[in-house]
Length: 128
Image 1 (cartoon, rainbow, N blue to C red):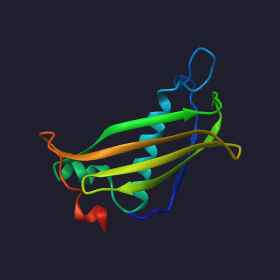
Image 2 (image 1 turned 180 degrees about the vertical axis):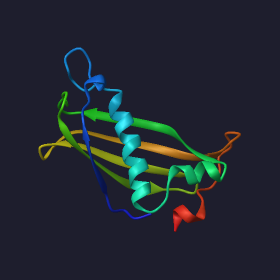
Image 3 (image 1 turned 60 degrees about the vertical axis):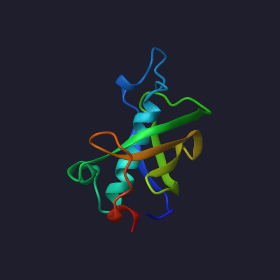
């Protein structure tokens, strides 16, 4: 897996906002998942391949630091990168950017498990 970052654009939808038309804090984690999924897809693989192999990537840690609010209809850039890869886990970093300004940062650790929830090594096709 390359250390290079991957970017996607996301427009804040009304249903993702709170009563003040600001992006609800929990939705940043949904965006982080979108970033991981699309970064994998850009490498020519899909999360479906994990499932077809009887594996899943589960979140074991997640954090987000909010610097400024995103609001309804804002066009955001989500930058995702891999910070660290272990035998069974991957740590990703994230930046949420609006108009060239970082408005949130975050990180997640995902762990590879089988259908019974037992930790498994990352598949070779991913590590290569």
